[in-house]
Image (tube, rainbow, N blue to C red; front, side, top):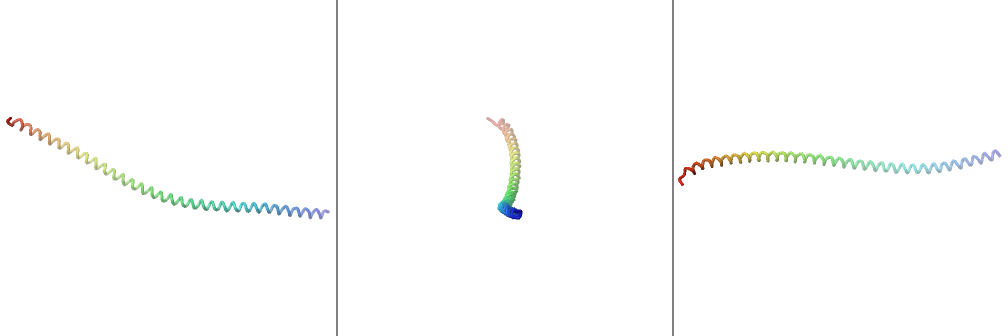
Length: 118
């Protein structure tokens, strides 16, 4: 009987080891599928990162161009403001000169008008 018990025990052990292999194989298959899914997600993430990096670079160039254009417009606005200020100052000077000339003309005309026979 010990021999028969030993054979039964060996058969039972072999059966249990196969069940363990089946579970292990299915677990391994699930892990392989999970790894493949993660690998695909990682590759997709890398593609998206590359695409976004290109987009950031393009936007950075666009921002640099906008900054240069803004600087140019700012310089032109400053130049216009300086010109306007200069013209305003010159106009004020001309107005003062004109007022002085009118004043001198009136003072010259007044004595002539007083001395003229009425």
